[in-house]
Image (cartoon, rainbow, N blue to C red; front, side, top):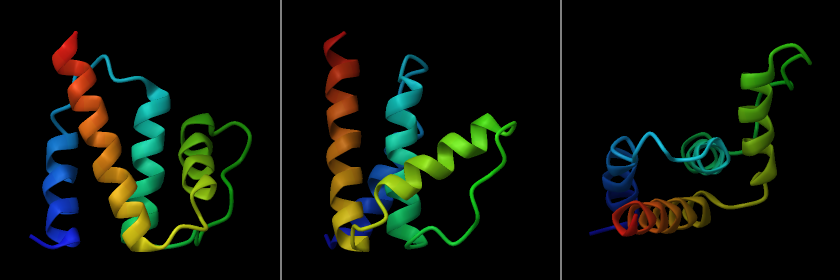
Length: 89
């Protein structure tokens, strides 16, 4: 299985993560997903009163230097880590 296929598989698995997944971890996954699928941030930062979108934009901006392949690999690793943590609890 290629990296892209594995990434898509784990993107589906991420939808099944428990409700207890922290917002911080969700934002990490969001940033890595956007970097892997879109590339570097291509929008301006949302306004100060739009906290949710601003946090998502910041998470994406934080991983801006990664290649698509690197972001996919990190995303897969993070989903595995969260799945293991959920199974252990």
